Image (cartoon, rainbow, N blue to C red):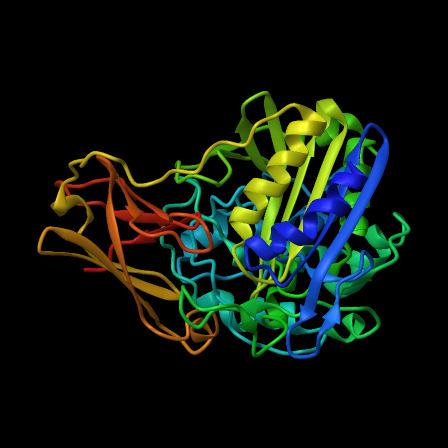
Length: 449
């Protein structure tokens, strides 16, 4: 595997316009690592295997680990209200705030607005201030426990539980309770620490067909740290974290099995998990089942996969470009060779026309970051995406208008690929022939018109 990675990584990142990537693979008890490309197109610094990349929402598995450590110590019950640990916890919907549990948060079934990337502080009080100043204004978009809707804010709440019960800020807990026991060598829990290492900068595209350009900022807001806004590390260190789960170093096997048991199903959109466990994404693939998580920040994307019954772990860290397509080709080949599993083919527009009800899909869907308006013009489906806050404009600087075609009777698919894949929109819970929610990027966005 080492020779194959060394020979192919550079060619593959060039093919998919990825400025830099680092990969680590555990198979047959052996670890292989490789890195290639440029960490920052503004400076020309080259990637090495000890370079640190942001892991984004893979951080949620570290937050999950902190919570499950507290469960193992008898200090947290997943099915008791969050208010048993955070009496001050509030949401816009009082009944939901009183009833939501850590299990709801770990499985993304809390239902309240999740993408609240609102700055609070750049200090150790960032998460605390999120609970005080931001959470009380988060609306209940989906009934509590009604279904899966990816929720970053829920993991901030979990991070605050860990802070309160340990009496330390989140970044210290990550280092003291996970990084140090696992003897990790290249981990940055806050931006200041990233300066100690060879750090990647994210790269974004001003338009879908433009080449990647250096992002204007390095990280998202500090308040979202437990959800994935700050943590950075080398591929090898993230692999060591995964190996700790394969070898049951952090928990006993029974606890890990509980975490990997499917808790909720996820609507099918292609390339996303089919189920969610306690914090973990679960993928059904030909030849087996994968566990792991994806992560994305401003121009950085990360992929983390475990195949427990084969003793295989794979980490891919990137800093821009067509990262889903790179994942499909690179990680797909690694998993095929090491674990005998086959990644599913991502959906593409159908060769023959498919019918879908215009009444079902047409309308405005209001998210906390982006407003999506679905319309029909001359028989074609179009989606206009608009950022609705200054924070959202970091991720979507300009309005974006995209043409979609029907994939089946309840889904649309982008006519043209972006970052190498065709995005799929699923329309859920129809009432009187009109969808109640748009499911995209793992989120249920309520109809607003």
